[in-house]
Image 1 (cartoon, helix red, strand yellow):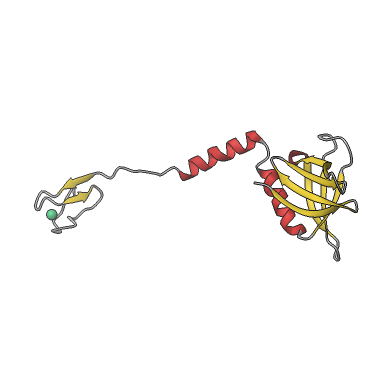
Image 2: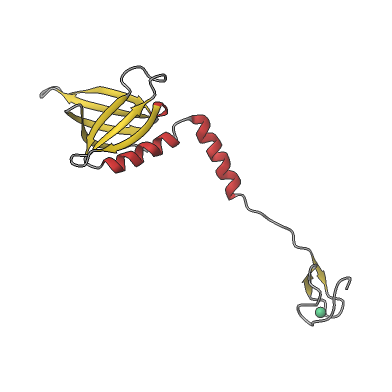
Length: 148
Ligand SMILES: [Zn+2]
């Protein structure tokens, strides 16, 4: 799932997109023959934190682990809805690594697995109604059943 809106990176307008394991800022250059240019690509696995800073004209601040990707560790984006962006990036970070998503799926699989338990029923020796093995009295006629 990708999330994309227009925004600004270092003062220049463009489009910020998150999805497919990376956060990308692209800019369209040229008036007649438009060329889309990738300004910055940040792999989501390299993102250390996402913050919204500033009271007026809120900025989306993405901090990157310098040991994972070369370049500047701090990226500031100006977007209309920085809080939505923060959520979208965090979501992408959670589903980025293939190994991680695999284990997540496995966990989900276990979680939805139905627990089926066999309930043994025994017929009442008086009326023949089926009662659970745990009951002391027949559910139908009230006679004592089982070993009691
Ligand atoms: Zn009975």
